Length: 41
Image (cartoon, rainbow, N blue to C red; front, side, top):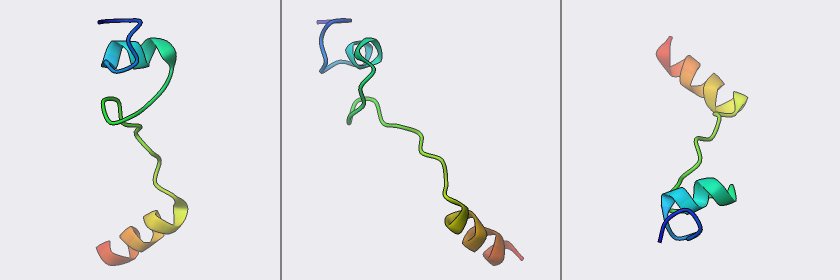
């Protein structure tokens, strides 16, 4: 287990894949941001 294993975090980093172990940081869409800004004001 390690870099070659897709089930581990290191394996996902090396393979360039994502999953439960390595979630993506998604950008907020402009629509979601606009709603958030409206509530702040």
